Image 1 (spheres, helix red, strand yellow):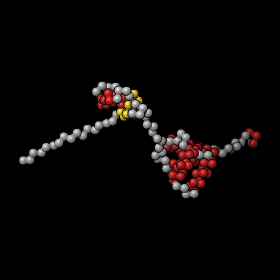
Image 2: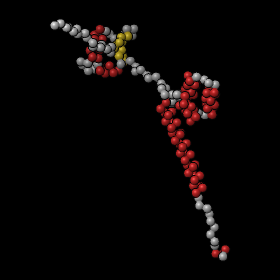
Image 3: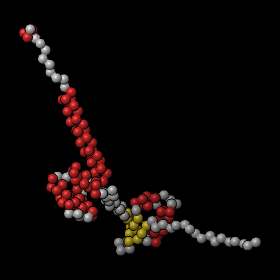
Image 4: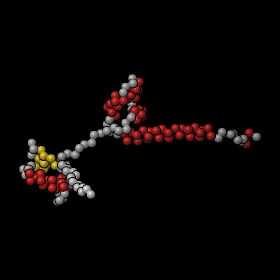
Length: 166
């Protein structure tokens, strides 16, 4: 019979809630960590108390939240082509066609596209606008077909005899 022993290695993860800016004498953390540090007994509270006792002359400073970078996931060639057709003016349509006819690469066309349509552009908004435009075009086409059928289906005017024709 063999005796097995297991070593208890601590696998707890230590987190860094606050950092030090020694040049400006500040303890820096996120707003969320500062809010959590107001609750006694939390890991953030303990970390802040340790930091403040180690550096009593330092000020507390909340770091600015990270700004998400605008990404254009889903922006493909077909979407750019449809969007230019729907929202572009004649000059933009001609420039886009020129890029396509020249065989420019996708990054080149995307760069041109974003230079022309970046203000307020999101992929979701573009898809919605293209769908709305296509729907309104279909509705207009249906109205035209219905009007044409109504004109064809109009009864012929037949002149009825009057008393003077007898």
